[in-house]
Length: 141
Image (cartoon, rainbow, N blue to C red):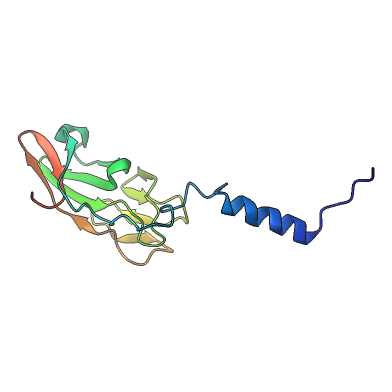
């Protein structure tokens, strides 16, 4: 049997099938093609102890799709953690920068404003408060 190099068509067809099967897109895929999740909470979410967010620091609650910053003791700001470029959930917070690994967008953790594109819109603000010793984000119940 002789082995022939793959043609361009064969390689492209294989790449298309792999993409259709979901290989290699999970990190950036904002959803399963169904209705998109809203970029901010539509109901109150209990994030736990307020002390989990350090004073002067920021914490990403990836599963809840929010980022919370404690500007000064007891002064919180929260933003939706869905990147405004392509709908990926942001991946990390470093040096007061909220980072999206999908396409490299970065946002200011204190204001939600875009620092580095391709995103052009800021992260949306989310209401945040403390109730009964718990940090709550989202609209009032």
